[in-house]
Amino acid sequence: MRTFVKFDKQGKIVATYRLEALPEGLEHPYTDLAEGEFVLEVEPTKEFENLSCLEIHEKFKVDVRTKKLVPVSAVEKASSPPSDKKKPRRAKTKK
Image (tube, rainbow, N blue to C red; front, side, top):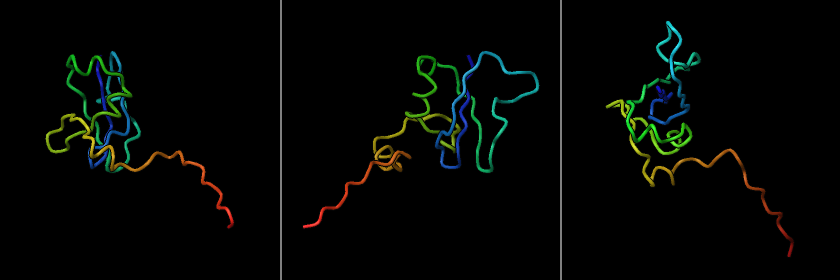
């Protein structure tokens, strides 16, 4: 099984893809790389074989200098922007 991650300049993973074989002539499965996006093939290790694509996406980032996956620290998780889902605002009550 081959695992590929698409990541941005800061190393944030924007997509993860896992497949058995790559079609002939392709270096990776992403045909829609935007400017500033890159692809890394993840080394097949026991650690990553047991993780889903979603777990890799959420728990790791790419060290852009070494081109290796590294765990996302708790500090980075806390400082990341909130999800697109917005909480409903409570109506202000008049006193």
